[in-house]
Image (cartoon, rainbow over all chains, first blue to last red; front, side, top):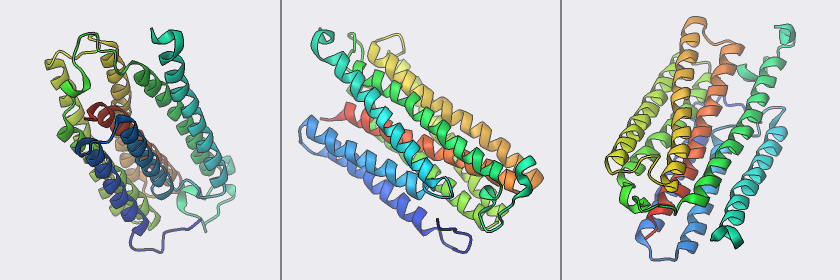
Length: 101
Length: 203
C-alpha cells in the first residue's frame, strides 16, 4: 500500500488518464471505422470497457489500499458477479424462447 | 469522536482513525450497491434497446461528436479528481481546492452537454413516452446525470468545509469519499459510452 505524500508527480494517474483516452478513442474507431460484424465489435469494445474500468479502480480509486484493501477487492468482484447475473440474465431470459415473441 | 483515541499518523490523513477507515469501507460497500442499481438499468436497456415502436432509432438521434465531448469531459474530470486527492496527500490544501474546482467545472460542462442532448432528442420527437427504447435510455442516462448533479452539490459543500476547517482527518476522509464517488460516475459512463452509444452506432 504505497503512500504518495513523498512523490511530487502523480505518475500513475497520468498513465491511467492517457491509457483511458487511448482505449476510449480505440473503441470509437473500431465501432465507426471498421466493417467487422456486430458481435465481434461488441466483444472487442466490451473488453476495452472492462479493462478501462478496472484500470480506474486500481489507479484512480486506490481500490486495494489500506487495511481493508482485500475486503474492497472482494466487494467489487461480488458486484461484478451481480452485474453479470442481472444484465446477462435479464437479456437472456427476456429475449429467448417464449419471451422473444 | 469516541474512536479517535487511536490515531496512526504514519497513514494518509483520511485513514488515521478507525472511524474514518470504517466510513471509507462503508462507502465502498455503498458503491457495490450503486453498481447493482446501474446493472438493473443496463439490463432493462439491453432488453428493450430495439423496441422503437415506430419512433426514432439510435442512429437517428445519437450524435457521436457530442458523445465524444461528454466522454472526454467526464474522463478528464475523473483524472483531475485523482490529482486533487494526490495534492491532498501532499498536504497541499490550495492545490487540492484548485483541482476540485477544475473537476467541478468539467462536471458542469458534462451536465451542460447532457441537458442539450436531451433537448435535442425532444426536438427530434424522442421523449420518454415515445418508445420502450427511449424510456429505458432516458432512465439510464437520467439516473447517471442525476448522480453527477448530486456529486457537484456534494463536492461544493466539501469544498466549503475545507475552506472553513482546513485539512483534518475528518475533512480529508470526506474529500476522499466524494473522490471515490466521482471516479465511480466515470466508471459507469465508460459502460454507457460502450453499451449505449457505440453499440447503437455500429455500422
